[in-house]
Length: 90
Image (cartoon, rainbow, N blue to C red):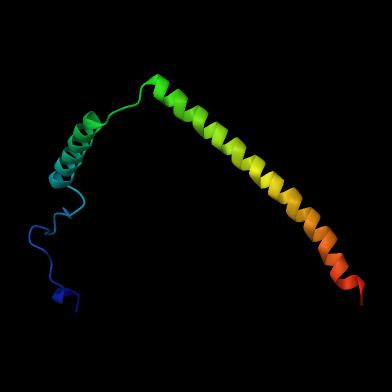
């Protein structure tokens, strides 16, 4: 039954499958050259752009944290006063 399985051409008893051998190395080298070609196309930010983006992100995170803190205090105050008053009349 195992003899009936069709094998792709070129993968005989030598052990050279699709993931090893000279084809895999040439594909790896081609991939590396492709990655290096794409990396040369990247426009990298300079230091002032990185500094500006970092400062903007820090300010945004601080403001967002302040908004969440204020909402937490407001909702906590409302819920602590409102929930007991709902059940106090019973």
